[in-house]
Length: 114
Length: 113
Image (cartoon, rainbow over all chains, first blue to last red):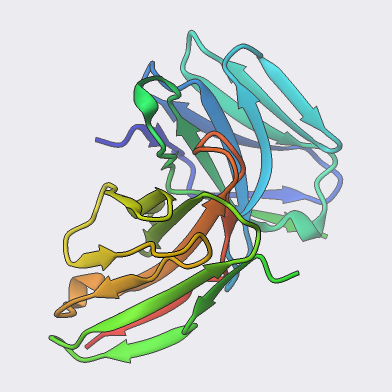
């Protein structure tokens, strides 16, 4: 049972346009969400996060939106740059119950074309 | 500024062999994790540790063992390697618990033939 789902394995956008990466979750106990970015042959690196008490968090070109009722979050990249081409992982955790675990989605490969 | 260091980066094992993946972090983080990533899949948690001397199983612990004798080191032991353990392994650490930012190593690509 996949608790964090990224239903689009890949996404291709033009440089300068908006990239929207989507993520759905099933566990209503999740209250903290993160996005990680991964280049080939490197480890994932943290990009941006959001707590369930917020519905939006912005950091430069990156904005994460959270819709708790729909159990859906999205990552917006504006404007997209070729250097943004990478695999993006959505991850979630639940603070109750002392869980120390992040649950990751399968990732979406973003390609930004010059 | 090393962060999380994993060795080796690549390894080929024969079925039934054993090996240890090394992981060291220099950020004085209490929390450390081992994940595996299979092709087209997300990261699956193998084992984690909340501090020296304390370890616990993650989602896919079978076939692996860990120890945490120091804050810095968190080795992952593969006993009796099987083809199903062919994967890329990532070690990570964090200052806070899982709700904090994880710092990942570059990964170790293991092939079992």
